[in-house]
Amino acid sequence: MSVAHYEHMVLELSHYAPALVADQEERCQRFLDGLRPEIRHSVATIDWNIFGNIVESAMRVELSINEQRSRKDRGQKRSALNLEVEESSSKNQTTRGSSSASGPVGGGSWEGSPQQRT
Image 1 (tube, rainbow, N blue to C red):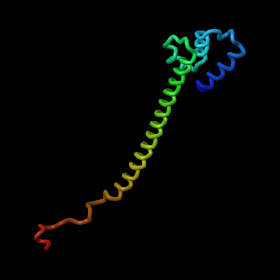
Image 2: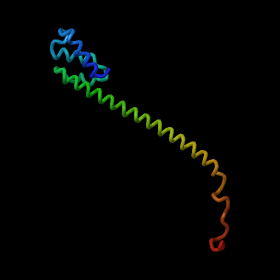
Image 3: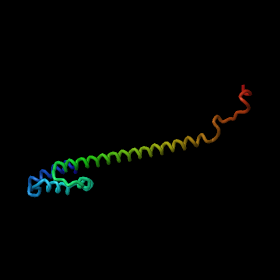
Image 4: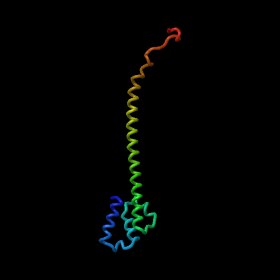
């Protein structure tokens, strides 16, 4: 679940149980407790007492995590493509190399000096 969706749920549920989130600090703590661990660990380093600020911080952390995953995924795809290209190139070189390895280019040898050939 995204942070934005989670925030929406917290705000909606707070209408039904206002005593649970009576002040900003309690609301912040409950919000923090419900975040995904990977986000909570980054956001929890600050003592939050304004709900909007903790939500904004959690959204920034979430965005950063998503960008890192996206870069990692792109890197893995590039690595896989590079590996395929290298394997294909290696196969082509082996095939070409076996047919031209039979002898010298042109199949003959030069005898004599260039002046003798004219």
